[in-house]
Each structure stands twice: as C-alpha cells, then as structure tokens.
Image 1: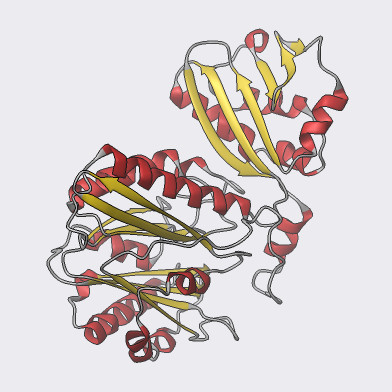
Image 2 (image 1 turned 90 degrees about the vertical axis):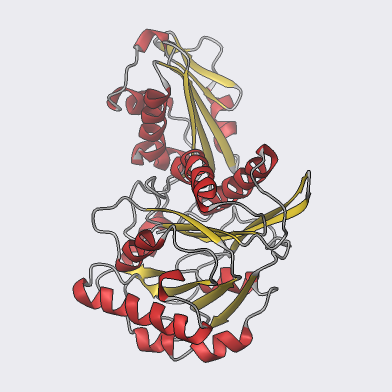
Length: 407
C-alpha cells in the first residue's frame, strides 16, 4: 500500500494525555515486518500479580495468535506477563507456519523477560495468508527490553496501526473507597470492522486489583455494548483481540460499580474512535432503534441499517434518502409493521404511520446530512426493545484503500 493515508476528518484533535498505569511498561521497534520507515512492533511488560482478561473474534478462520491467546487466559497471575504485537502481517491462514511463528515469538519474549511462555500474549494484524517473518520480531527483543518505559504508551498506539490514520487512546482516573486507580487503553482499527468483534486490536491497562474471573466478566459485558456495537463494513476480522490487564499495583480493589463505569467509558471512547477512522469515512453515524419487539430485534434492525451499502452511500452523498432506511428495516428479518414505523434524522421527523411525515421538508433532512455527526432514530412501534450502534458512511475512499491494500 503506497504512502500514509491522510488523517480522518473525524479524528480527535490530538492523542489524549493518558494516566500512567503502575505495573506496565511499553517499548516499540521498527522490525520491517511489512512497513519501512516506521515502528511496527509493540511490547508491553506486566508486573507479577497481573490478571489478564480477553475477548476475541468468533471468526471460524481466526489466526494462530488469537487461538494462542484464548488458550492462555486464566493462567497463574503470580508471575509476570507480556503482550507482543506486530503490524503489517496478520499471521492468519498460514497453517502450521502460523503456529510455529506464534510459538517462536512468544517463547523468545518469555526468555528475554524471564517469564513463563504461557504468560506471553501475542497479536498480529495486517495482510492475511502470508507467512510471518517472526525472526524480524525476535531480533528486536533485546532492544525492546532495554527500552521499556512506563511513559511510552503513545508510541505503542502508533506502532500497532495498519490503515489507521491516527493513533487511538483513552484513559480515566477513578476515585474508589480505598484510593485512586487508573485506566489507559489503546486500539487500532479502521477497516474489516464488524461485531464479533469489530481488523481490530485493543489493549487496556489498569492498576486496579481484581481477579481474572471478575475482570473477564466485566470485559465481556462491556464489549457487548461497545466494540460489538460498531461496524464500518460488516466484515469480521480473523485477528480481533481485546486484552485487559489489571496489574493490581495500586493495591486498590477494582470490584466496584464506579470502576466498571469508568472502564466502559474508556472502551466506548476507543470503539467510537475506530468508527471515526473508518476507511474513507467522512461521517460518524449513530443508529438508535427503539420500540422493537425485544432488544435482539432492535439490534438486528440497527445493524441492518448501519451495514446497508445503500444507506451508507446516501449518507456519504448527503442525501436524506429515508426510503433506504425503510428498506433496511424491512429486509432485516426482525419483526416490523410498516404502519407503526417512524424515522427521524436528528430531531427532524421524516416518516411515520407508513408514509412521509406531513411536517417533513426535504431541506431539513438535507441539512442534517451535511453534518459530520448524524443520528438516525427509528421507532418500530411494537414494544420496548432498543439498541444503539455506531457506523460511518461508505465513500470512494474505502474502495481505493482496500483495492490497493496489498499493492
């Protein structure tokens, strides 16, 4: 793929100042896995006592690193741990070679940091079906070990990017009864984004003290409302990985509602940033469905709208074509009644009772579509089911980026 992409118009103004998390250090290197002239490997070292939770793609063709991470969750937290990530090569659909590469990298990290191999978690992101030159990564490990720093989280966020146009980070400080805990997270993701999970990598770090079982329950629950409620192109990656590490270094118990609220805020922020960096995106779109027969039906309707190429291209063209929303609801397969349906673009009532609203003016709908951030609200009119998902428009930029991805 030729040259860096221009920064998304929906990107935050700058990378946030993230609170340093006790018990975690970062380092990056330029290994030349695929890219030249930029960092492409990230190492995070985690203190002894760290609990690690994870959520992963449910793709049937998930990568060797994903399978390895899944097998390692729930290990002995008394030892140290590490996360090693490379960008440029997904190490997916590479058969036995993928397993060898994953084992070679994780074992080399274990030896370099003097920790058990079963406590080294790895991720790879990038092109599918090409054997990973794992020796390029392992050759960087001594320098990575020597460069580990608590303050290098922004460098880590930069190193894990593929087609991302900006590094993604979010953080929070939480006052709990026993003291303050910190949460910092980074993510990469731009295309191949759809639930299960949205190609996406997410790493969350906190110095709260919390068991692996409780942390896993929190992460799984919040993922359902955050990363599994975003879509850029409806395509589920082979490599999606979310790891959350709780070092316990603060000595403050994190099993409090306030901690979970803060963790959800960080995860939702990162999920929204992924959508804002959707390949070629110019519009950030919130789709809210209410009045469905149940929450599951609401989710089905919401994703039918959010994934519709016709809806997404209309938004890209700033065309208030509400008929495409009607179409998406009708095709979803979830229960709907034409004559009870209502549609709003932002606060503009567009359609109701099976027809265009009497008060609707095309100019009002067009004005909403000219915004960078758009809300589509559909009320099914049947019961109380509801769901909100987030997506972006579909532009020529998406086609260009993906047509040239391996060139």
